[in-house]
Image 1 (tube, rainbow, N blue to C red):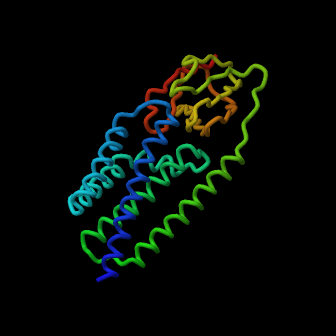
Image 2: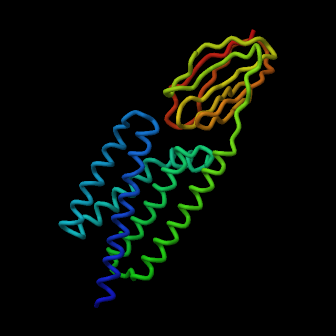
Image 3: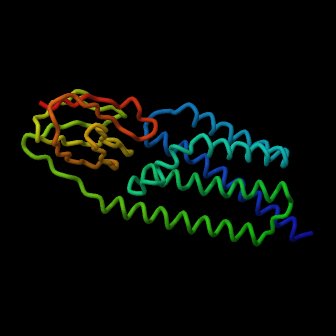
Length: 239
């Protein structure tokens, strides 16, 4: 009986820590983006409600946090996939990795608690495994980020800046055979994409990329393909 009680206590602790990890994601993204994103704020508040409920009614709180974890993960899949696929962009990669590992911890705890079959040893093994995976992922992201290099602008380049999820300027004019120098001044990743010219360059936070053009005269649309940046559109005129 003591073992069962201790085991349940460990799973409850894992559920709480998993919830804290999911709550960290909205805070981190808000700091990086420097803007309040209403859905993330709502989730943060709901997680607090779930934790309070867990303290008052274990079963209802467990179910509530399980449902919130599933919704949090499901609704953010496009953003999670994009961020996790770019470990060199530490400011998005690290919060999302922590978020994914936290969801795994929380949902595993919910399953164990509702089925009443989780053991203390299983909870400990899972917790240690997730911590190791998180440390390895974060270390790898930091190493990749530190290894990034920026291009250098050349005379005659036309400069465009990505800042505050906007292009500045949104109208570019470049001579045929010229180049566009793209600066990313945001704390998160962007892309400089011109679909009609088969151009798509990734820009990690603070990274600058020089894009050489070889195109027929005309007008082309350039965008950022990062999920949530759909308003970043501009026109590139090749003379």
